[in-house]
Image (cartoon, rainbow, N blue to C red; front, side, top):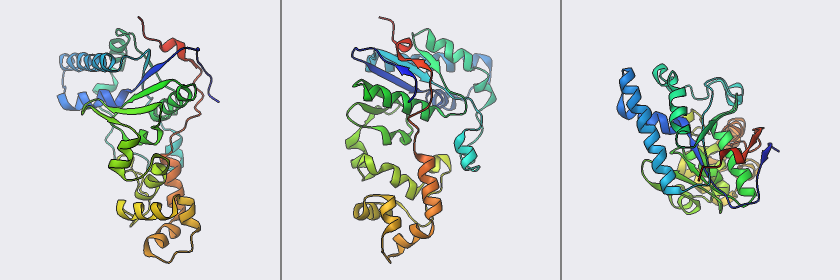
Length: 262
């Protein structure tokens, strides 16, 4: 169990996927100079301030990650190989971003060797398990596996709330099947391949019939989609491991330290 201490009061936690926020703004503005970067930092601060005004959290954190190899890279060396490297200009200004966020009363945090996704998932799960509410600010759909009565994902740039109904309406599966869905179709944004030859339609059909990836692997089914999954069992199970967010990262944090100043 991660060491995260909670107080007995109502909590609404805004967990910000830091690089998701920063890089979207960075890439939209194409900065080249120090002056340009100052404007990007300012814009990121303004963006966070709008999120604070909209969601009115009692607690907030911007979660960032070290750009090193994580446990997923050790499991699958090709993980995220399809992504371009984070621009050096952006990395060199991380302290400026953190200072801008801190000026709004929002601290930044991260855990070495873990992605921000896992840190946010851990915070969200602990807060939700103590009946607090969590808004995850990110456009990354990997977080959809977490949504439930106390956890929502908010696409800040398109102003779309992604909740349980969104997963069913837009993906076609209930939240509890979302991880297995990704294990089958893959996660292109992270270079997770899934099962070759299985697309969204086949995945939905298989999950509708068998409910879980484990059931598909054990089924006596001679249909082409089922055979493809069974013949690629190793790929499917590895993909499921890669897309499953960890909710037990040892944070060593006191949630009270992220309380927003009144």
